[in-house]
Amino acid sequence: MKTPILTQYKLDPQVIAFSSTRHGGYSMGSYGEFNINHYCGDDEDAIARNREALCQLLGIDDNRLLMPHQVHRADVACIDASFFTLTSAERKAKLEGIDAVMTNLQGVCIGVSTADCIPILLFDQQKQVVAAVHAGWRGTVQRIAEKAVAAMTACYGSQPSDVVAQIGPGISLKSFEVGQEVYDAFAAEGFCMEEISRLMPSSQGIENEEKWHIDLPACNRLQLLEAGLQNEQIHTLPVCTYEQHADYFSARRLGIHSGRIFTGIMLKEE
Image (cartoon, rainbow, N blue to C red; front, side, top):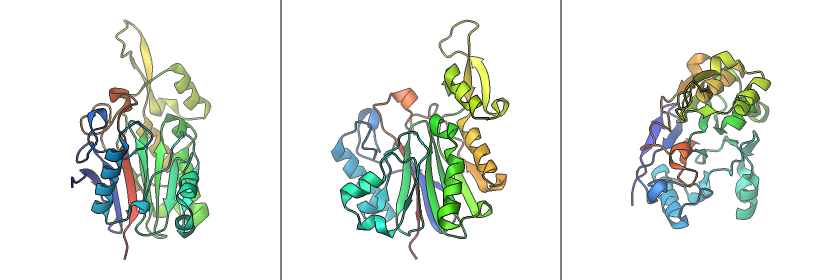
């Protein structure tokens, strides 16, 4: 069996935290090699074999590897023991339309799927709670990172001073060219545009034309600071998926019919 090649994060000895790369799996073509996302058109047999390989690496059963069906909103789901008493269809329904998940259960790997969007992992060292957040530009505008921290506080009593965060691989400011409507959406929500945006020459090569670029990792970092975390609690992987598409999936570079990065976190079993 192939072994998935993961980018590992050292958040805490009590957790396993990682982002998958494109290497070490069974998918092919623009999905190659490692993809476990069911919603992007990949071969289901390859997905199943990739999931099996990842579960073997993590030492968990397949039903303990959880990924929501994301829809670019800001809804957060809590995974507790009752989740595993549900039928398969009920578990799928609970994860439908969800862009962030959290749990305090050991041996349950929760994660999100991205290919240019920003994945964020959170860990409360005191309450032993983990969360995984999918922050595309729409979710970022809706302040999903802030809402995830607030949800941890509401559900588990987490304090921002106890939470460490990892921002994973995503598209950089240089590569994230957007239309005026996207810039306007951020501005309308009160973001400091001087900090998160820049006018740059159009990628279409049109003379004297400039386009806005948005810094999604920086924008989510600012949200985490506003949620109460300090700079030293937030770590950012310096990877642009668009530029490093040979190792990480990029929908802008490879098209939407391509694989997805899985960024996951799991509390180790004692």
